[in-house]
Each structure stands twice: as C-alpha cells, then as structure tokens.
Amino acid sequence: MKIITSWLAGAALALIAGMSSAASTGNTIATVDPEADRLALQAYFQKRFPEVELADYGNGIYALDAASRAQWEELEEFPPYEFDIEEGEELFNTPFANGKSYADCFENGGIGVRQNFPYWSEQQDQVVTLELAINQCRTANGEKKLGWKKGKIAQISAYMAFTSAGELIDIKVPNDKAKAAYLDGKAQFYSRRGQLNMSCANCHLQGVNIPIRADRTGPTLGHVTHFPVFRSKWGALGTLHRRYGGCQNNVRGTALKAQGEEYRNLEFFMSYMSNGLAVNGPGSRK
Image (cartoon, rainbow, N blue to C red; front, side, top):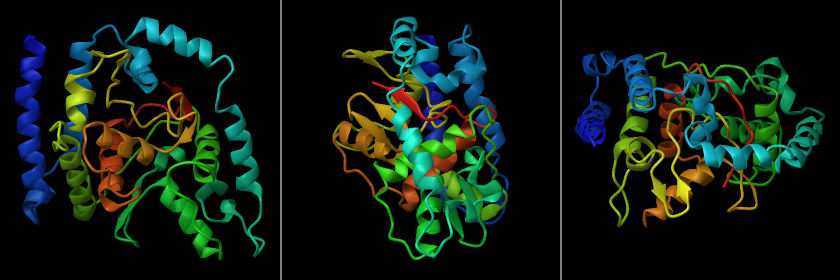
C-alpha cells in the first residue's frame, strides 16, 4: 500500500509537469530530460518488482505473473501469428505497379530497422511510426493506403518486427520540436479520459499485475516491444494504435484517430521509455 500511495503522489506530479511542459516553449522545453524520465520509470518497476530482470519486461504481464506466463509459453509453441509473418514477408517483397518495393523506402532495405521507430522527422516536422512509414511508402509509389489497425499493414509491420528480433529499441529525441512531441505523448499517457476517468498510467503503472476480472494489466515498460500483437480477443493480428483505441473504449471514452498526432506522440513517449529493451514482436496476448 505504501508503494501505491507513493506512486499516486508521483503520478500526479508527473501529470502536472507533463501537461504544463507540453504547452511551454523556448528554454523550458530545452530543459526537458526524457532520459531522466526513463530511468525513473525503470527504477519504479525495479523497486516494485525486484525479482524481475529488466530485459524480461518485453514479455509484458508474463514477466510478472507465473500462471499467465505458463499459459503464454504453451501458446507460443505454435504461435498464432506465424502465418501472418509469412504473409507479411510476401507482401513486403511483392513489387508495386511501378516496379519498386517497400525495400526501396527504408534504410537497410527495411530489414532489422524496427527498433528505430517511431522517430522524429525533421523533414516532415512530426513523429513517424513504422505503420505511417509503410503507408507513406505506398502513396509515394502510387499505391493506395492500407487500413491502420489490422490486416495487411499489421502483417507487413509484423514481418519487419520479426527481422529486428533481439535489436534494442533506440529512440532519439533530437531537438526542441521532438521534445514538445515527447511531452505531448507524456501528457497523453497521464491524462484521464472517459466516463471511468482513467489514464494509461492508472492501468499500466499503479494497476500493474492487479487482477481485473480474469486478467492482469501489464507494465508500460516494454509495452511497445512486442507489437503488432495477435490477441485472442481479436482473433487476429492488430497494431499498437488499434490497442490504444480499445483501451479508450474500455474506459468509456472516445477513441482517437489511429495514426493521428496524439497516438503517434503517445507511441513516441512510450517507446522512449522502453529504450534498451529488445524488439520481440510480433507477440501474442489474451
């Protein structure tokens, strides 16, 4: 109880700091220290769950709950996303009508680059996620956009994640505009929403490993490492922004637009928090 009480006070301060800083400019933005935030978050989890190795947080709730982990490991013997990886590879390597392919749009031909997304694009003046980059590649080559939440875009993203297995997440916040996007993502994480008046932090910081009906919520640390995810609830592969929307619906709020600025900034913040953890997507969850 003492840990939870201390966290609530800290989270309230973080929310106030995040929201005020996100609206600031100039020297205030320049003093923002994402690395201090990351280290504080990791320290919080290491203090609360001292028996858990930092690297294991990429496995989400399965790093914390032994019973859930046993079920998950059994499921992973025959991964439900295996065919999605194969389909994603075929889609990735299928040329566009103009003869070019996804490989022409990405560094290293798109192989082993997942750990660098999302990133701040100075040219576009915005956060670019992997799914956004996939669709930008398509439109630049005369192809129609794919849907953001599931289907082909999730399969292509899954294949690209698979080629980056074991690579450590390495997100940069290179300038003041990137810091402003990071701070907006931080504010999104701590802001309460919906009729239940809950934030991401309520479930994925203070509520971690606490039973909610038959489930337990996973930690925000490592949350992004295993996406796209095959969820048993969906019966299909889905993107991180699909999961964001589902969370907002769960608190009886209104889901924001997938790949809109708010969700991209939220992903930017959460991904930076997981710097140093290994990419292990796609994954499977309940």
